[in-house]
Length: 371
Image (cartoon, rainbow, N blue to C red; front, side, top):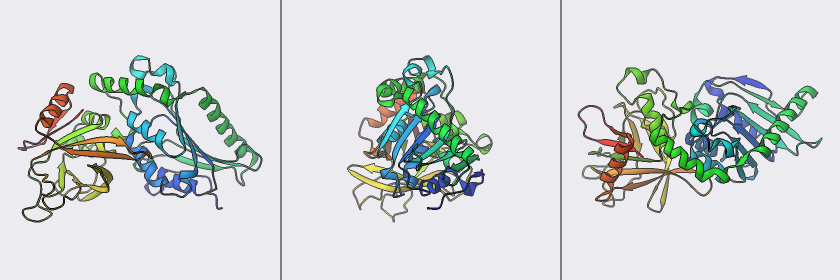
């Protein structure tokens, strides 16, 4: 099979996720080792969507070696990684870091690499390594200006083979010393949630915001970190548009600009009426894949809700709750429910207590929040 030549890039058309798809198809790999400093929901979902569509992905043994320094890794993202097919997850210095205030490391963990192997380290084996600056975030994999270098042992000089072998040996040594995620999962989740309630939130690549946020009326950068950090988002729907016909409930939900970060998308400058991405929504017992999210002509994020059968659901003047969750095969999806008689008041009270309740700009009386 053709092996990609060594290359360095930061062009938008050569995104890290595109490089990963090419690397996956470059050989009949049997293992993927991924040391990254942190993982967030948007990055894990993109990895599962793009690489999960490749035939080799399900057969590939996957080992993720992630950091939890300063709470930058999201528990839901770690859960998703651990549930990917043939995946295992360890946390560097996890047993010690999880009990330190603020998950402050003695020595920060900062690598970003994707190490593919076949029959390694046998003489007939092969190793390929994509090393760069992108973490397991949506921004790092697909939007940011990253610099990544691909090298492969097949047909390479002896010095290259030795260097790649040294990288693999480094990973093996660190893997053997690291903490299985399940050993600290509950403790980390509890501390993460407490930290989000009481402390300044740690930023990640996906919280990098364009200057336009500071110039235009919209959510503040700190608000975006809050939206990304919690697993429950409630929102008043308002009157909705009649896009499905007069007299029927519409299904296009307007969200305040950059609310998209809750759904795992970075805060990027976009032209109006531009697509943002697709998400899977679980409503009742049904999964609705690829519900579209876009930046609308009215300068708001716009989410297409599941289309209700005639008379079955009326979204108008309701309050919806979206809960981030992980499916059985590691897919991140969003469970949606309509509020009952006391639900909105309870959700609103939770957000107000946390300081995570918001209003829409202008004269709108709509509210939303996270908890």
